[in-house]
Amino acid sequence: MTARGGRGLVPLLAFLGMMAYSLSMAVVTPALALIQQGLHTSAAGAAWAITAMTLSAAVSTPVIGRLGDLYGPRRVLLAVLVVATAGMVVAAAAGSLPLMLAGRMLGGIGGGVFPLAYTIIRDVYPPARTASAVGLMSSMLGLGGAISWCIAGPIIDLVGWRWLLWVPVAGLLPGLVLAWWIVPTSPPRDAARVDWWGAALFAGWLVAALTALTEGMDWGWASPGVLGLLALAAVLAAVWLRVEARVAEPLVDLRLMRLRGVWTANAASLLSGYALMAGGLLFPLLVQLPAGTGYGFGGTATQAALLQLPASIGMTAAGMVAGILDRRIGSRMVLLGGAVMTAAGYAFVTVQHAAMWQLYAGGLGRGIGLGFAYAAVANLVVAAVPAGETGVATGINTLIRTVGASLGTQVSAVIVAGLPGERGFSTGFAVSSAVMAAVLPLALLVPRRGRPRRCAPLAGKECRTAPVG
Image (cartoon, rainbow, N blue to C red):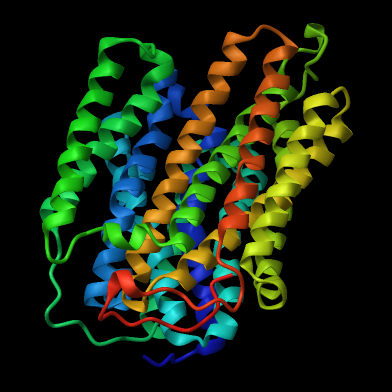
């Protein structure tokens, strides 16, 4: 595989990742109340604008990663961009909630840009440059949130909330043309097959589990609907594991997931996803509570958005710097440092949240730490697996992070609702700090830099000699 535009390849992939997933996901958050009014639905119905895309991305990302490994990432990337763009157009033009949700589900397929981009980067660039490129890709998760909060207010005030949904389309259309021009081709694997039964079972148990997590607050955690979905998810997951252990070319190679560099990174992704979305709920909610409560700030939505901005910028910058640090100290130490910073940021606001500057300071530490952690886990997975498994491995890592994000939102909401007054926020911050502290032993378990990677479980597949961490 050779690149037609090596210098522009990674920035283009990063831009596409931001537009196709990060910005597309974040852009509806500031407009949820207006979507509820405009489409004449309930608050829960409007929230499905996020849930539908989350579910779609969670299901499709590992499948797309596998397709990229089998049929070449360029071909699959272009198809993903076309489908995601069409979905965003449908969502932006929809006059009803069902049509909008259908468009958002198609748009969620854009989450597959990330594992495809990691595969392209690994194929095109030497190991010494891979870490920086992966760090830049990971930083897009923070940048998408920052941009959405900055542009939401002016666009809604000047032209209306619906135009906010056209922003990803405006970026994806020229991005699609540039991807066709710049992204290099690779030969297909003639003998490759897709495990469609495994994909169907995987989608079944994942949709059931994430729907239960999403609707737990509204339906009740002990309601028949939630318990039934969790039971269905458990049964389908058991069948899926049995299928994956028996087929010749599984969607998810379970032996691959047992590699120490992989399972530690996936566990860290789950916890980091929790920490990201827990803060996304707790900080804005605390700022907008009435000052009469004695602990709220009575702030506006704009003030809540400005509070998120430094953290998002810090996360973006940290993701970019993480690649440089990877070459000097290894992703293992980057993950360790990121976990410490994030846990410290949350610990600070657990005990000090009486002034806005304290929220800014704790939020900035959280953002920078998460930027390091996200970039590190992506690099650890890319370095730990054979080259032909990069797409599916990073797809699974993205999926696990999405599950963690869903848990962060739901658990934090339960804590705030269940514990009265200021105690709910203090506990929510403390739990988030403890969650990131749990990343520390995982980081210590990551293989050290220079230690050769063990490829025995995947005999016969290509294994690169780049350091794991």
